[in-house]
Image (cartoon, rainbow, N blue to C red; front, side):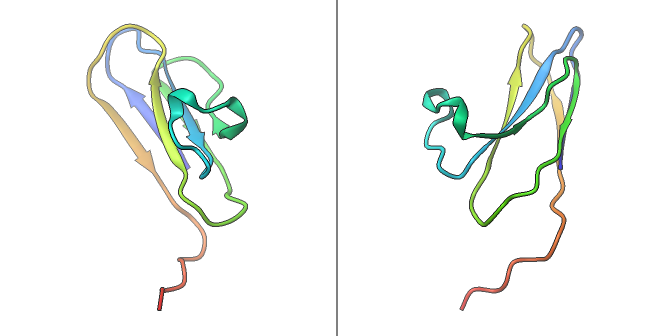
Length: 85
């Protein structure tokens, strides 16, 4: 689970979760998007259950002009990974 709260007037942000095969988000096809927030506004959230192991990349996108601090929260649920040997 991930959520973001933008703190500037008129903020419109989005969350995009990219699949492990992603190399560079600006050049990646939309087929590499695992999940994304769909509403508009300063507060966004998404939930995703990974089908397997790998590194996923979370992007916070500003869809409106402006800049200021934002709060990002990421929560992992489920079983912890087995220790490497």
